[in-house]
Length: 153
Length: 124
Figure 1: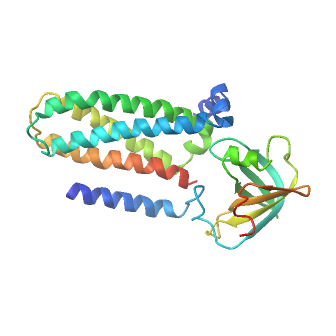
Figure 2: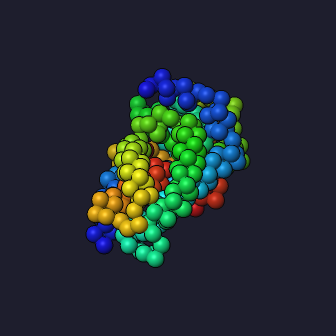
């Protein structure tokens, strides 16, 4: 773990981002774009799971939204790794960052289950409603912890 | 509704937990009065997301936040103007938490030269 952090922090790309004037805020903005796309579409799918917009079948909403969610997650993770590389030890040791990563793992596992179940149902069942509630809490928590990193440490 | 209240609760709990160590962004975490730290530079960091110094003062290691890199550079505080071991005077505000050895500098003085990283705040 320690050697991995050292390798990330001493990489050329980390050094470049650290010293850049415009690239760092650009990566920052890309991270926000990814988060907003992912969490935004997740909240809409959760709303459909809770019964908002019943005129469209759940599976149709899921099939339409999930590619946007996945794109958003990939963008956020890629930009997030670059932001992390600037000060890997600081972030790895930051309690809010650690909480964020723990919540993110749970949120992703829950999202995988929700995806599978919602793609094949016209209407949400009890399991999906519980999963949707967990999804709202977990992703809100991930987002809040992410924002809090800049204020703690 | 229950989900919403759970979320609100979680957010409030997190905010409370984080409150003790709030730092970095803005000035809300600092004490209002002017604060002067005199010591020896132990570490200089000039990169993103903002420049920082580690300063040893009377046997205590302080963390000194400066401005984002472009703003710090605009103040003239660039690579080469200071080195580890140099004496530094940092003027600014310290953490409102008396146990936290952390401050945010508005002006650094090294070898008689002032570097105003927050020029609009110095002397206000």
